[in-house]
Length: 325
Image (tube, rainbow, N blue to C red; front, side, top):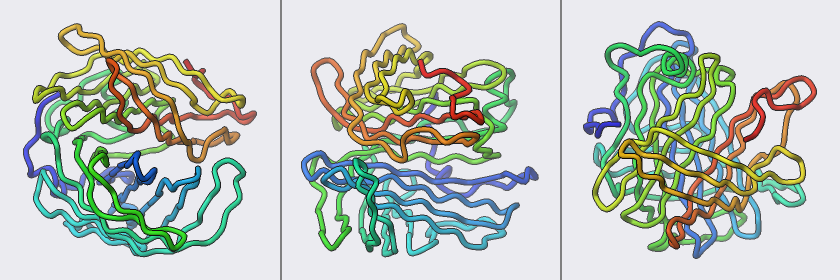
């Protein structure tokens, strides 16, 4: 997986597929303050929309969640603004500023009680490594690779970084400290949420110098394994994700992830992920569900944080089409 240049932070030419999308995603977490976020803006010019999802992990096993959509029939450069949420590129390939001031729902994840709240934040993401990914140019390959390109995008980049700034929900402002890290990614190309049979996507920040990212995605042509490890200033592609999952009592929601990430040099990076919170969790009969899991990761005696994201397609009886490994 190569290093990409900073121009990929700009918009890409729109092609003819109705599901063409350019999407931006950020996540981050500060374990000291027990606060963080994950958020995405997607632009679908051929469908005429721009949408945003913003979620903030809050202390006490809570999560603030907001969503909005507006009309947008052509691509637009930074800043991206929808529903009171704004993404602004401060330095291509290096720095972004995220701000928000919007209505949200505040969920208690243990009891599912919820209430209205105001979610306000002002954050800056600063890269700890280069952007890595695939530029989506040239031949799209065959088999699982081609199927993935038609479902989740032709081009894709990821990047680890540190966060600064603050998040406020339910009237309480929390300032992120030096342990606040996360990842961002960007995808461009056709995006059809119902396309993949499943995926397991991992975003892992162990320290300022050790980061992992990647996906195992199920298609009718087989599973595609893709990813990277950045360790002590060196980038290596990952060729396999070996995964074993312990679930909660519902048999669906991820609880513990035992992951071996195998790189192209044959090294095995053995990780354990203890999932702290999941949203939304569980199954939805006949639906596509993406369960986002805030996760504490351990590697070689070191501890960091990140995401274990599980996408499921459920049949009409609420069973995953692909069994959870």
